[in-house]
Length: 271
Image (cartoon, rainbow, N blue to C red; front, side, top):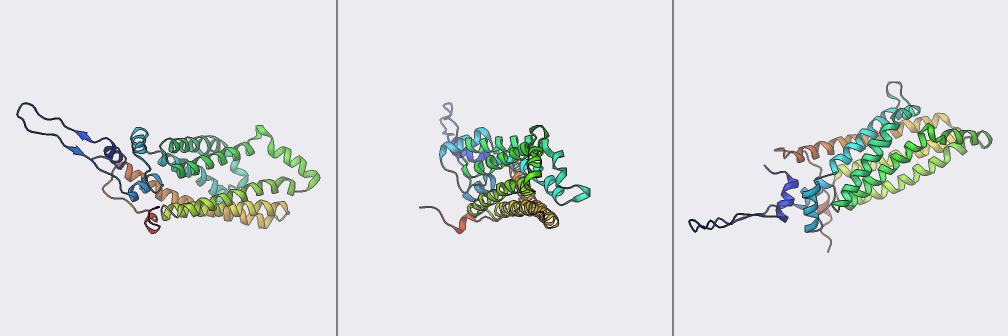
């Protein structure tokens, strides 16, 4: 049985059988199966397919969305657990995840984003590529070889903790603003994606607030906000695992699937 991705391609390249010259019977026929807008959105997290050429690219490259979701989950989930302090971990434990930030969160998500760009999926490209650069940035910030934190701590000795914490707090807050924009745009797709992006935005918001509190030397309040940020990130990951299960079942043409609660039909088509 063909998967949904192959169904897209079959609409672009119908299969033809030639006339049998021996007995004169015309065996010619065409097979044309299309994805509904809802099916396309559920597979590619984008409201609709844009052109016939995009159908051909989907057939050639497959669906990179699942890989992007996996990269996101296997980076944010352990990070969230550390931020919440589970089993003795803490925000100071994030250095142990630096390899994941460089490769799984950074490189893999950027590759996923570029593949989304190749097949013409602008919104998933924007999400995966931008968050991939965030993880790469975080890796560079934490990497002892770059001595970023050591230099900031040295500078903070003369100017107080704000010198160390506040700049990265600004960075996180503006990431929150950007992610709220993505969340608003995701209302054109499905409930689960909105859930994920909303809680990622809340993660950035609370973590940015934590850094501001650390800059004020309010360590206890900052610590509580870090835990809250971890909880928001973990909640986002639960939505991510849900959508990953949906994508895995769709990729293998499973006889049933879990719903993503489509929102595109609420807005109607653009005229």
